[in-house]
Image (tube, rainbow over all chains, first blue to last red; front, side, top):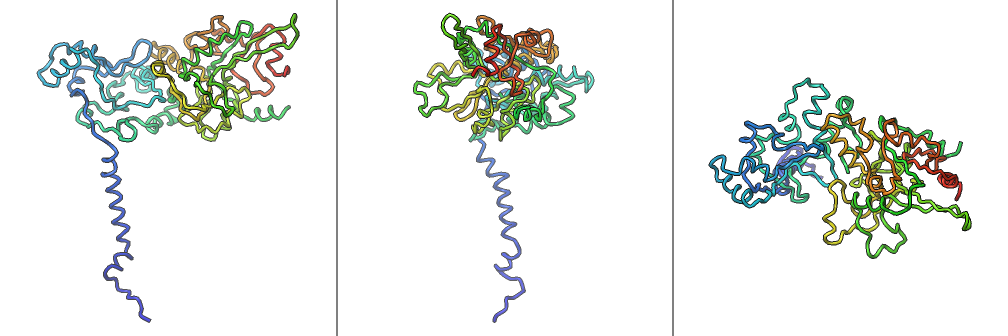
Length: 207
Length: 261
């Protein structure tokens, strides 16, 4: 009866050593890290080449994105608001000239692609999360940097202009859209719950 | 002590700093249905389907229903009353404990029993558990005729077919009132009477529905809910609803606890 050789050689050695598993793992990692995400998301361009970096130099977030008197949030500035500066050319770029011609003169709203657009069953209160609410609690003293506070949830605006807008082909939402686990990272945190008015009830965020 | 009382005594009653409640004056209610219309418009309930389902389900979707009560006496002594019935937002709700997916709960400050449609699987255990029949099941997909879809409010989500719906005391208005309070540096725990008012209370032409914080002495409902003629429905079940009714008529108050049936 021929005995199987114990000496590793050829294809039999490859199979018994676990090489197929390692190769398969590498293939799966490549698929999951690079290929599948690229298939899921489609890159889109904003209708106007707007740059936050040049606007944030001498302005605060709240100059364009502000709370109304009733506590609701004016998130996307209207063309009328933008035209308070951009009625005439402020610089020399072709993007600005195109914007004034297509939207300000035509009195049209810009169909911006919104990175943080939430589904219709999600409620979010900017009034509860703004810098004044933080200052009133006094945990961080008087010093609450508004721009840094916004960047806690929104992508950093200076980096935002260079980051592509990626839309999920299945859901239609931006890749940057905040998920429930991001909300829960503060709302489910016990120390945060005790110090603030934050609640962990479902209907605090769902409507 | 009845079985129901034993059950509810074991259930945890959460203490809240504010407790939103409603006091409905049955003597003022004419059964006109303005509250139902206001509720449907406010909360994105689709118009009734032209061909309702024939499998014996709910006749229509409504978060507040008006029941007609009768003292069942012959003509000279006959008397009618109308009883609007929203979700009672019980202090010890029967519906929340039976939900297998925690789609309904009573945890947020204010004591409003929530209903999360994105989470609801439509098993309808809560409907079976609710002694007030305050919940309704979305049996057919809601359809808004062309043009009417423009009145859909962004403050309330629309629901798909196959979920359980119920009154939320217009919870989005509570959130808006809190937003306004925060923006004006007022405490969200001390909202003024009237800062937060559901659509039904706002629309009642007779002012039969009062709404406010049952624990705040500055709110009208504080005194109204503690008045001599105030009662709650099926009080012997010990669910402790946050909706109170008042009537000066004895037979109406007795009907409230189902002794009449």
